[in-house]
Image (cartoon, rainbow, N blue to C red):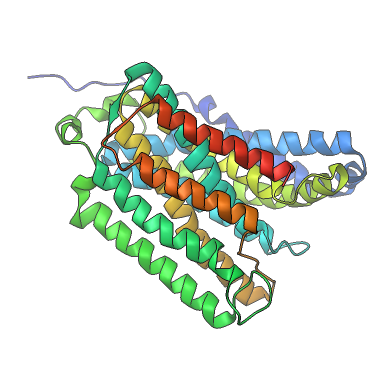
Length: 375
């Protein structure tokens, strides 16, 4: 009879990002009087923003670490769903918090959602496919999973980011109250149906056949002597200061955009990078380990969750606070968004991926960065 593998106890100092986040938040709340002069000096402004971003990134990495332990204990696809919801929930709360305080930021939610689509479907997905292809030549995944994700992502993205440009009830790329309520209910409904399909009706779509046989041994891939309750509590403890730190970052970020003449979309891009990078690193590691199915679940799942959860929450914030919400992207971004969605559908129309497909997505990400600064 095989003995159960035991792991040495984890040291408490491993949770240093939590202490750092709490200390940074305390200083930010108590030191507003002395931090205000930094808003007039670009160098100090960049230093303040860099410090806040570093703390948020460190805490986000810790969140992913705890979520991955829970994910491996739950198994696929529920484990990856938990990892996705932990990060996406943090992103959605940060956007809603920043949007509802301070000066009006009508395009923040739109810019963040668009940045998520470009960053994940082109940047991180391209990197995962390229690195996985370089190491393993061709990689297999469950074609039904990618098709299920994309058939959900396509209507949500188009209705949320493109349709507002063409409605006639309101002026500009906005929606009327009735249209916003309908879009919100539709987003929640689509995502709820997806959760039912992923975790009950068609669980097999989101895993490879061999993953079911290996489920009993996957817990050793991310050893932890802590209990499941411990990791669940730590997720919440890390999330609270991060949301408040995002609020503290809003004013310096707005000032930097104005002082340096940077594009307004840069704020949404930075927020997407901070939240999605740790989770996407896990997806890239999975691709390097020839577990492309996990990469697909993480990356496509994060896009679907981000759009499906952000739309109803920011609409609720807009309706309750009376703040203007701009959802429609401009003509250049509509073209780039369409190209990204079509390319993603073609990429996942084949049962195998390779380095060429990854390079194409990375080139599209380069086009997104170029058009952000030189539209």
